[in-house]
Image (cartoon, rainbow, N blue to C red; front, top):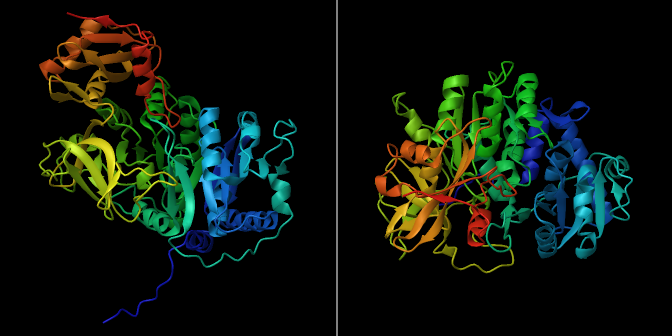
Length: 538
């Protein structure tokens, strides 16, 4: 017996139509040096149609890659819809990559068109003669520098066309968007999202067991739109009627607090390093008003318990930790305490990586592939599968990452019977000391609970006796002081005795990756080259 239900394809054009028809007066706010610009969902939809018509006239065909080299702003949203809905593939370029990595990605994806914000023209100009597949560059914003040679002005490009472009009927499994991993090891790898996977991911983001975006929300989108599609929030916004605040390049604590006070978001998404800076500024700013926020979503790295407690106790804001990666679109788990959890244990759930969201499956495996029990204790590597999880990389064979329909994530940890994941480390960051694992994540979280510590990153270094031992790299708060002895004594009541580090480095700042995570490979290289001074305690 067969179902008689309609079999409509799940397309991004369906998302934009829904936003245009049902939430036409909802707005996207873009913060500029001159003030805040506003546009309704209806206006963005119509401008996306104009952009699609203009790109078609330029020669862009189905399957062609159109790249964006842009901040979070309204024009970027227009490209987010125009490019995949017309049947081409949107390729969001990481504006913080080194030039050689950026050129590699553009060439590997074979981008034919790039849309670039005028403020980023100098960065793109460094590689203009190294990207032969790029036929046209469209500049958003005034630019008379001539650095890129012949270019097309974005507004002139759009104004030559009228709205009314008819979105084609596409195969829901066809490519819609490309993102590349941040390239922490080796060259970045491309992940291609389909219309179907994006549609399903957007729907999952609206559930109250995940981020729960709805028409009652206004979202401050701090996470870059080049970082896994802004964690999917840009598409979810049109799906759910959530208004968006686009901060562009104003990503420091002071301007973010100003946006929160003046534009009154109910939720915001960003990496922990951003939230640490917001917290630092807010604690010393009597005019800081965070009262509009029902919660903040932090992901991309472990969120320290002290940060979650500070936002809760001082500002009444819940921190919602999310776990995922470029390969998982990225939503995979969200740390919302289970219903009925006593208030005194809710923090214990919030510090976990998250609870597996409906739509994906996660398991923990041993080195030999054995599936391990979900007892909250047994540690192994997380593997994941589901309709918005990638099954391969674009143009690169990586059999070590995929097997039997599962993606090997490289994250190490345990999972309990309620589906909550606890991540101990990335496989490349775990410290194997005397045959036992030391969690750099747990050490960092414990260290950042010390009032004098602003940031802490822990790496493994060779040890003659134990094979590896932790080296703690600490950034102190301005005006604060603490010795290595004092910090080790502080840790002594918080971690196992054999975890206590002997090696300590005090540094000015922890190096960050292009998406704001701690860049431990830089610290490891500094140690290997004797460029990371440290002291050794008895």
